[in-house]
Length: 583
Image (cartoon, rainbow, N blue to C red; front, side):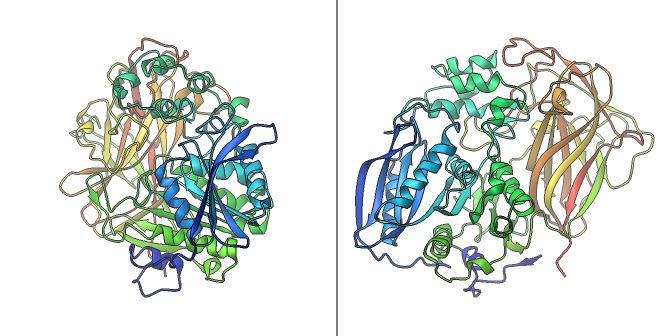
């Protein structure tokens, strides 16, 4: 893996962009801007969507950038973006999605965005001021709608920049494999109605703690049908499959620059979309025209060099607007600026705090090493236990035990809202609890690159008919700072299938595979890799009541006695992606 060597590589997109905001200067504005507000864009069912259109005040045709948002198209941020793109020779269309802002119809997340996106792209591509080429950009929900539109294979759709894009809605947000992410309640409240709502008046942590969780919407002063529907469909059934987009994208040939951050809470959508398209797309064009950019950012990409208590250095902030301009100049204006020759993967290696280029993700030369769980004596309970991680296979070893009480769940360090779920937080305070098992590897003797998917194989038994297993992977600094890298969860009843519930036999040992998604960090000399295991991560995930019933309507839980096995017959481990230097 070769780090970027400096800002002198002016011909290469990412080499320019990662050297900071001054490295790539966008071309000077060329056009005065003409603005048309309240433009109606007709949908095939007769509903009209509202859009504001920013155009170069000049004769001729121009390519179009379409942004579809549930966050009110009249916001000043969109107006500023519209003026920028129009002054640089693009038509910028900012559209309220169905039922939001000035648009007609009823808003229900995602269900109309494929067809409405397709109709909107067609409208943009067939206007008299359009060249017929349409690009889309935007983060989060604005990235989601790009995926839905791409699956419609519209001939006018010529380029995408989907940023911090969630995967299919059952895979991560609002639901992660049958477990509700509680922050979705505040998100849904924020976008209930036609305009943005004030959620700051509520005690969101108190609302998250309310039982039954189906009534959290009432704690937020409203009835939210999507929230109730999500909870009413715990399995990956037809309700969720009708909202899925990732498989439909495989027919797309639209070039995409997929962007996220290592601490984006919906990060997995970006990596999954890149992997799916580069390995499973149904055409060579679809496979070859995908790029990936991941920085040291949260859900708000490129927002600063510091996240939480970690400073990622002066190159953490890039000239992302320049990246976007160069991308669209190539695909929408056919300017030969070398975009197609750029490295397909550009990732920020935390710890080293430097940008690297690769040809694929996950990185092909990665060596996946099993770090097995071990403990002696008093067991792995808490930071003060005897839990260790090592490549040494276990032999005859004791089990580790803890009690999971839904009335006293292990905390997940995060604000109780949807803006950012977790970061590079210090988990030493949480690791003092006996219901958190802590396994720590020996300090590394030289800088070690851990970059790729993080998976845990866990052998465990519970006294309950259903329970959750949570994992967290951390980088422990020499001063003890336990920096979260990423985390994951599995619900016992969904251990074999997301489509069918299968309750546990109390006391029986089951094998679980838990994904903690991915990370990319260089462990510095003296740092240690750590794995936490527990059965809750509140308020990120809704608590399992351990009864095996409907957790959406339960008002009381029971304590579960949990056992983690790590012996020769049950070799629990963390699979660590270690990347050697490029030759």
